[in-house]
Length: 140
Image (cartoon, rainbow, N blue to C red; front, side):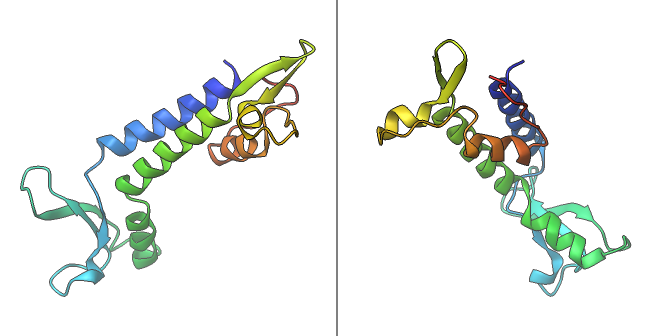
């Protein structure tokens, strides 16, 4: 599997997890006086227009901090992030081999500024790292 395929698979796996979760936006109970603070709430799938518990961390170590972190990274946020990452990956795919050895990044052809970046470029290396993938030297 190429680096491009690894990154794409990782993004699509994360996207599928977020799409299967209770819809967002998620919020903590501290946002409304009648809700429990360290509980994360999301949109109800069975009761439109209402919220239900998505996650209760009231008795966990870090309770409220955990609830805030979970709510800030709800499925709506993850879906947006994955959609953006797929667009970045599409713009920065491997474009062409130079001398049959090195690939250059596709964005270089679009930029036409005269500078060529080897693939993976810095953006793709950063994207790979954010998904726990380590690009190896010369990996297409």
